[in-house]
Length: 305
Image: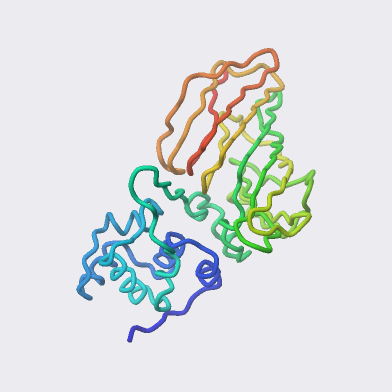
């Protein structure tokens, strides 16, 4: 019988509340195994799975459903030192197939989307982020007359995907300056805050005014205050899961930039995919409105005259 390897607190939490992809990704990371190493170990057990399939499972792009795939998942549990049936239990019933079948929402693990925040996440031992679904994200940022970011006001409409949800976690990041700090919190109160000055990273718990049951919704508002930093040329938001609407307003206190374009990215290191230029009128504000936003990165980039 395969030995069950020791589990960290985060992995135990993911096994209770996380997704199949999240558990697989975290287990691979803490065991230090590459996909090729896993493929070889599975082959040694008489189970053949391609590296591409393992990658799709790891990133939530597909999930195992056929009998031979479920056999591979049980072998994966042994290879990764996970309790028997722990991964299989996270798969749930098979998805409907054929015309009209709804596609399973994608997801990106927050450790991958916020790599500079990993040490802070490990220190806080936070619950999985799939317990709170962000329905709408509205952000209003202000750039001062010196072309520096000074503040970002954020309004979130959230929905609980489990019972007894009482908190939401937000990430702040500042480029080449001291970390941003949350302030002017409404409809919730600050919880634990962790800051990494060298990385310019901040992770903050926001404790909801009331505990939510599955399907219940609430609103959260907060303002991030940014210390003086370099000249700002872009701003983006990172989405670990789909949202139905994203509104980004960039207000420029001084002369507006010469051009301003929206962009999307699949990941932090992926190339930007720019869109058509946006108009900046008398209000000196650019407006970006997106609906049915998929996981990844969306934002604005501009050039100063």
